[in-house]
Image (tube, rainbow, N blue to C red; front, side, top):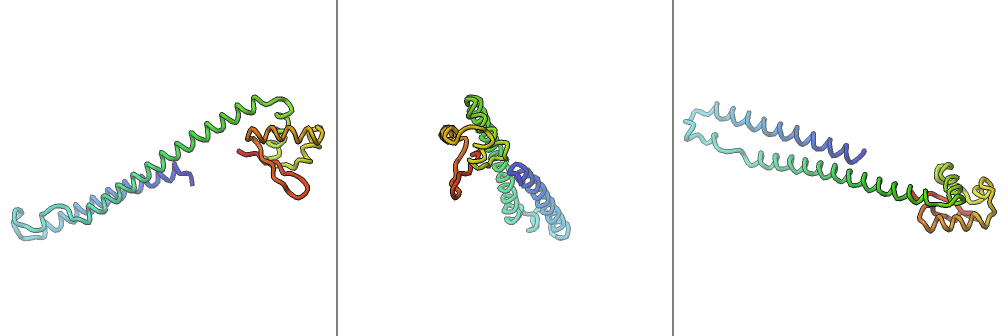
Length: 157
């Protein structure tokens, strides 16, 4: 579940719980005062709010604050992802034609392709593909992983 929606759910639950605790406390206070036969000034039941109520209300407020923190953290992560995507798209625009062709081939193959398949699909020589992949790897766009006798090319984002 997305952190944003989890935060919203926690906030809603904490608000509902806050009102439930508050209303139950008021009802219990009203019932205890009405059943007591003492004068309102001297009645021990007409005192303040019990300690348990303060604890419960404090916990619900803390739960709500936790929900807000989750929401804010989610927004921060979203902005970081957008910035990263913008940076990557700017890097892709600056690639030369050969690099773009290889990058697009890797991207079209769902982000994973063997280096030998890149040689076959691009029509470039093995050395040209290797050098171009070195440049793409240096820019942080792809990663080469050794698998037996060949390399697997994986997009980094």
